[in-house]
Image (cartoon, rainbow, N blue to C red; front, side):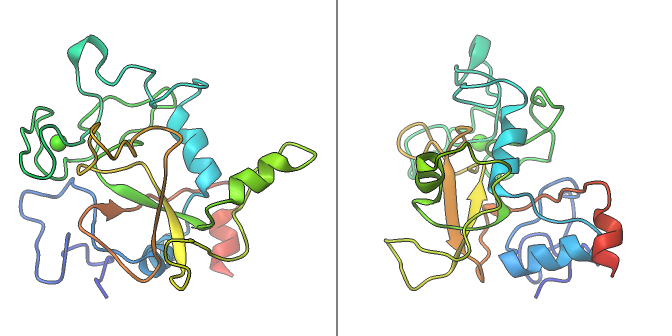
Length: 210
Ligand SMILES: [Ca+2]
């Protein structure tokens, strides 16, 4: 396990922070992200919280900043430009991860809610969870995710939700930086394009300290 408290191994065991002090941490399994959040008196966001936060107060827009991928010709997130996976033109300035807050914040003042690295959410992944909620008699309020995981593509793998897309996403086939796009990943596995962010609410620190 990467010792996040030391903060010295950014991407994998043996990697170092030299010149990358402000890049997101990578290669962290869901369990380790949860352990870090708990240690810090915080927690991972739910999937619903992540999307609510990503939309930044603007409703029914494709991206956290609006409906245009490049408003005024400007890239708003660190994604992939060029013919994936053969050519990365780095038009947005970054080949792989970017330091956090390299692009404008959304309406809530939150950075990197799209692109750069995927981010773990606390929910189990079920492909039909939101369909089921939508079919219910009442609107769902602050959904916390299903009680277990089920991905028809890999039914035996316990998966958690991830959100936001990454520097490997492209408008050619993986537009996961869209505000409504969902991702999923095996809870015990980290990758080089997946990180996390923590959330804190009033009372969390006291609750986790018990
Ligand atoms: Ca890029």
